[in-house]
Length: 108
Image (tube, rainbow, N blue to C red; front, side, top):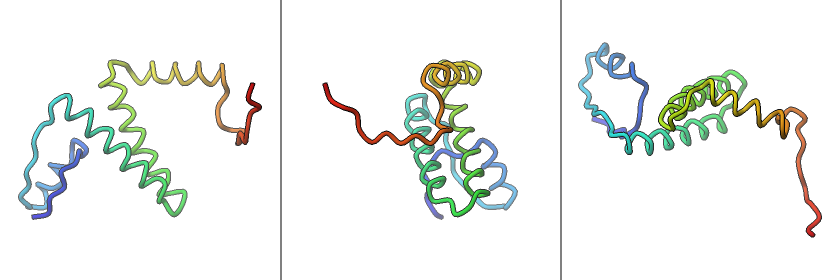
């Protein structure tokens, strides 16, 4: 039986059960969950970076967004608050739409 040892989406046990395969899961502690969320976010970011086309990229971005929702909750906030912070930062410092690449800044 292959070993995965990774955080999976909530419905994955049901999906596996429908195939008739045996599997083993456990519920993570809060501390373990924080660690595994970060690992999963890194994994999904790697998959986004490896995407070969727009469809694959957007699929991975959806996974990243789901993980951002979960991570926001474990940090005691909400998706709405996250969006408000994003908007405030964008108003103060801008977004990334202009594709500006900073090369250097004169040192005082």
